Amino acid sequence: MAVRAPSGNLKLVSRREAPDTLPMALPPDLHMHTPLCRHASGEPTDYARQALSVGLTEIGFSDHSPMRQDDFDNWRMRADQLDEYVEKVRRAQKDFPQLTIRLALEVDYLPGQEDWIRDLTARHPWDYLIGSVHYVSDSWAVDDPQKLSTWKNRDPWEVWSVYFDRLTRAADTGFFEIIGHADLPKKFGHKPARDCTPLYETFLTAAKKRNCALDVNTSGLRKECREIYPSRDLLQLAFQKQVPIAFGSDAHKPEEVGMNFAEAIQLARGVGYKTCCRFDGRKREMVGFEETSNIQ
Ligand code: ZN
Ligand code: FE
Ligand code: FE
Ligand code: ZN
Image 1 (tube, rainbow, N blue to C red):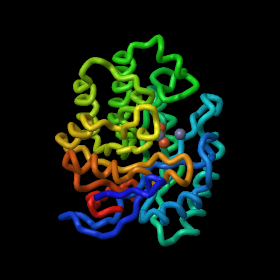
Image 2 (cartoon, helix red, strand yellow):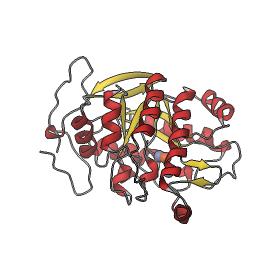
Image 3 (cartoon, rainbow, N blue to C red):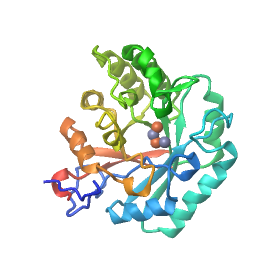
């Protein structure tokens, strides 16, 4: 039985191998932020220390990528801070040689940004890139609490359709190893009354074609929707289509590293997954992950 510490974090008590893959204790936590994005706290070294204390062996930093225009919004690093970001992650790598620490970015996909994304991609030797859609128009990020009232005048189905169209296009660019929090518009509880399967199908077909993994992201449990991104329905369909997964806490503070991984593992196992992804220099490797029954 999975027993969680009060923090929601977990520790591994035993190790068992999945067939045909490298054994791994807990899955890598490949989604976390740094204070450079202006809405996270704690230095990468603090996240690394926390990772070790909850029994993780591998993490990856994926802070919000800069936009070409620094004044696009106020929740990301400036373009001239990209080197500083890389430096912070390198420092954590040096301070914690016993932990594998990957260098990545959570890149906002908006149609028309392809050249900028190519430019960013070439600037540093990223281990992987997470492609995320937050914006359904240039002025509205669906997960922005400051824009919550925008939802009042919108039909959820219409918003979800635009969102999934963009997510499909993000996957189709072939720029990204992982697609972030695939059903983000549910964050505040806005769900269409209609069946979303056709939206999921189109997106997952593109993800499969382009070898994108899905971010199994526990931050939804800390939001109004109280649900992991993506939902069980979406994840089940992803498993049927053999789209791989990568785990992420989307930590915006050190104590969130690895948070609720027992639930994430249980969800993934429940729909059939036994392996997840790790990345090194944009090359993917599949690793087995423990059943929650082996974790406390
Ligand atoms: Zn963020
Ligand atoms: Fe995000
Ligand atoms: Fe994130
Ligand atoms: Zn995110």
